[in-house]
Amino acid sequence: MHLKYVIMYVENPRETIDFYCKAFDVEPGLITEEGDYGEVKTGETTLSFSSFKLMESLGKNPSHADASNPCFEVAFQTEDVAGGLAKALAAGAELVQEVKEEPWGQTTSYVKDMNGFLIEICSPVTAPA
Image (cartoon, rainbow, N blue to C red; front, side, top):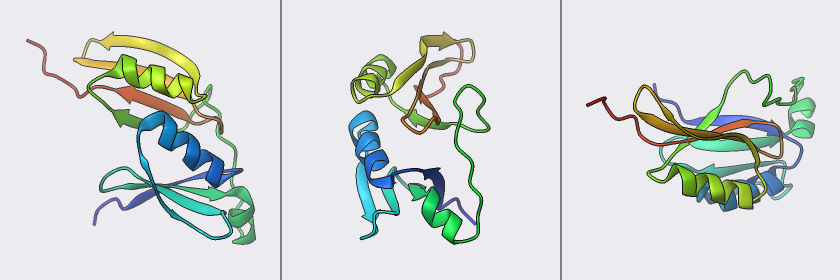
């Protein structure tokens, strides 16, 4: 087995996809004609967005995200964390944590997207010297 996609439940998949493309340099993938489901291309694993309305029609009871009380995060890796953070903020993300050098050899920052999801912008982990 391998991880194929992660689906996040949102009010408006099209708006969310537009935001992610601007904020995190990803490309749009499949978007249904109804606009109730869509994807962004992130490499081997696809990041997907499904509307609350669609999930409710399928008998699910999705909850809203809360970056101040997250149960998971999505991480985008880059060599330029400060630049990535600036781009995400310019696209409308809300700052959660400024750029920080972590003791395990990684640079991190965090933002909240328009849906309340916690998003990490990070560098690759480097082994301590």
